Amino acid sequence: MVNTKEVKSNKKVATKVDEAVVVERVVIKKTFNGEVVSDKMNKTVVVKVDSVKIHPRYKKRYTVSKKYKVHDEKEQYKTGDKVKFIECRPMSKDKRWRVIY
Image 1: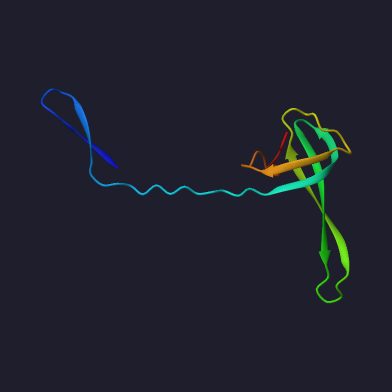
Image 2 (image 1 turned 120 degrees about the vertical axis):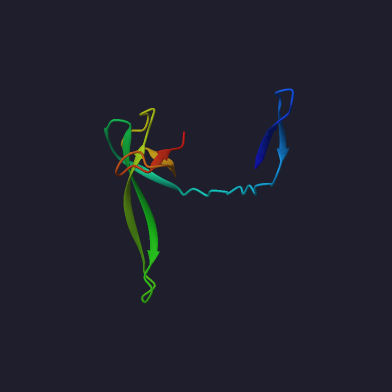
């Protein structure tokens, strides 16, 4: 923190009283690859992401898919396109992702 004190010539001089510890946090954002399923909304596309899971007991592989609503500012992606998207701040009730161009 920096405190200021006045000198007789009405100038403000900055002096260090005690130093604040500034900590930089590295934020790792999630990224996914998927296929556009729907592009009927304004500036939003619905993207389906497939992931392969393994059953804990039988060791069989199976696919699990999940749909995400992704913000597409330029509206350039259409149904069937492959998309890469990243986590961001909430833009609406369901949208917390944006497209990487």
